Image 1: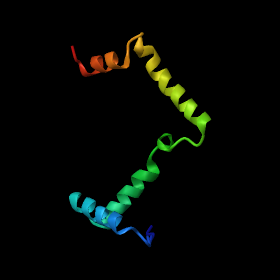
Image 2: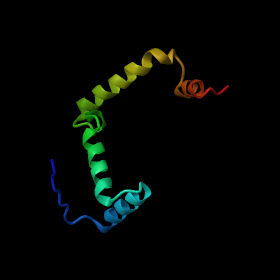
Image 3: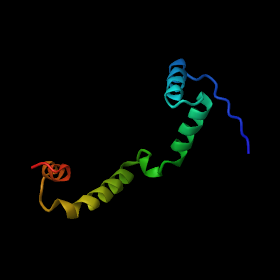
Image 4: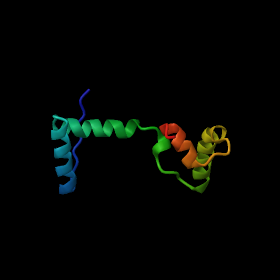
Length: 87
């Protein structure tokens, strides 16, 4: 299945960055744009900004729940030291 997408009025700076990124990856600008679009639409919705304060609170609760059992009264610095293996 072949689909054509035309992007008009693309900022020159964005175009240049796309060209450089494609060169770094040794691919065409078209292939690079296709890869970027594919990654963007396949990202989980959790990465999208929260729509409202209530959604933000729910996301924070979920994260707190992940760490609550691991904290055992320790500070964030203490947890990070343990994770890094610092003495």
